[in-house]
Picture 1: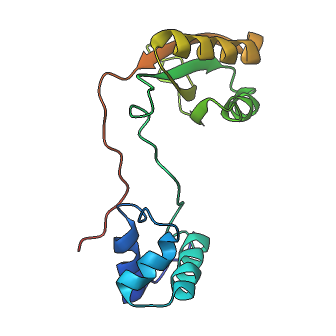
Picture 2: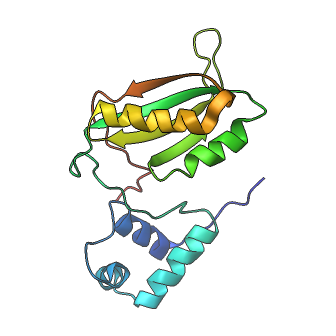
Length: 163
């Protein structure tokens, strides 16, 4: 069982200041520090501590792939032998065009798939080409597959602390 992380008022203010995204500035943590009235070193030390203790899981860029010209989004789903799925997932997840890859339980008889890998393309043909490349990598380990295409954009957000 993991211990509960205790955060103070400044940690909460820091999370609230960053939860909608870091400022688009040459030194974003310095801009956050200025907005909070603390030293940049304090902000960076607290972010490192919050990450180390699991209060913040990650900080990363979330590009708008539509604005970048990627109009087709396909969740490729694969039926991989349970004994091979971890290794297969590691190999698929390492591909530079796979944005996220994970294992999920099957739901027989209607859902035989246990490996999921998201790919994006300028059109469906590009997504299908990338799925074909995954199929070549998986070889005989993949007994079945499909591609589930996005039909609309959903805004993804994590937990938000109230103001």
